[in-house]
Length: 121
Image (cartoon, rainbow, N blue to C red):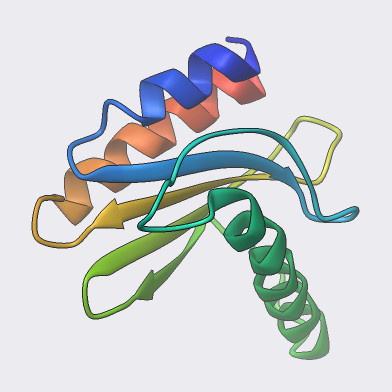
């Protein structure tokens, strides 16, 4: 699956506001779709590189031999899901912002996991 296809598929998730594929080492978006007035997806995705970096540092400090699957941030009106993509040889994550009233969080996480698997293969 290529980046454009993955992003378009993520935007079909009910409640999707915007999605980005981000390199957390550089903070650069490899692509993004959506956002608009509700959210500047590119800025949010870049800012969330700090969230990923902080969590990776915390795992290292705690000597936890664990892999981050995803990070969930809940806001009053939105969910933000950060899904790390392992086994790509890169430091990538999918960032998905959802409208909390319309989204089904469990289903959104399931769909994002499927997209992540396709990108990793």
